[in-house]
Image (cartoon, rainbow, N blue to C red; front, side, top):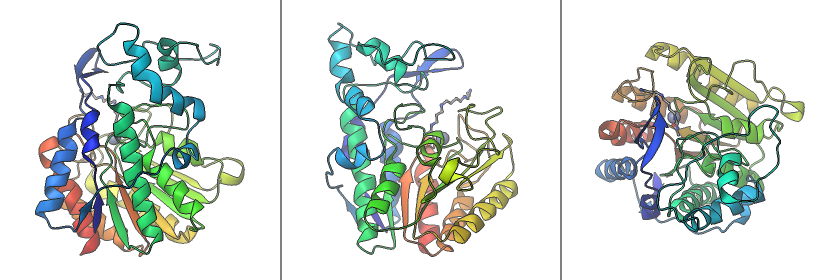
Length: 341
Ligand code: SP5
Ligand code: ZN
């Protein structure tokens, strides 16, 4: 399987996130991608190639122009205020506050952020565009006839909606790729999100559409981040009604419960008649993950890959979460090798 990787991910290196009431070192670190790349090489998965640049047009198919321009200019405008620390928001446009885009960077940071865990740094723009390019190059390869491709995307993407960042995500790599697949001839695309956290951004982007099926297996938002989306009764709206499936599982759920939900999701994908599959591949479902509460063990990821291969669809994997840095490489490589076996 081909891997798409760019060193530019290193340019996203946030210092801290707000967690349990204190600023802690970011869980989403460059070392995550280094470990995944090392495992891909060690396991001889296949060629590792550099993504091709696609420019902003395919990103703007999914993201709001005001948001994209904000991300592009935020760091420069933030440092112009005399600051030399990462940019983090300090409030949110919550109920009954006006939905007006503020004029300056400080207010815009609040307007365009979902949480206080997603710092904008000097290299955020470059890293996020390179990740989108990896996903887009992957989509291009699928269109070209490749069976499966791994986009080693960092920063991740599935919490980012059309017009906000959050959950360590800036551009929704998987959604951008799914849209590119649609734009280049794939009639029906399924996006399956197996990250521990609900893919709120991806759900939101495709919620009113029937050409992109979205399914997510995740920690129940009644107790787990991102809390405000990912409930079982969210089934899509308008045209999209019946094309959104959430499988929220109680924190602490066992491996067999997780695989039962996976089987239900796979059945829906088969029934939908997808032409291509995009997998939002988070491995924070691992038992040892420091911020999540499922119980998958390293060999279970091989089983996951094998089950996905059973769909027999052109498949693009986009990396999402996974914060147990030591085992992240083996966990991701197991999915990819399990798929190819
Ligand atoms: C891509 C992705 O996986 N993003 C996840 C973002 C989660 N951010 C908030 C996590 C809060 C977890 N709280 C657990 C505290 C453990 N002491
Ligand atoms: Zn996650």
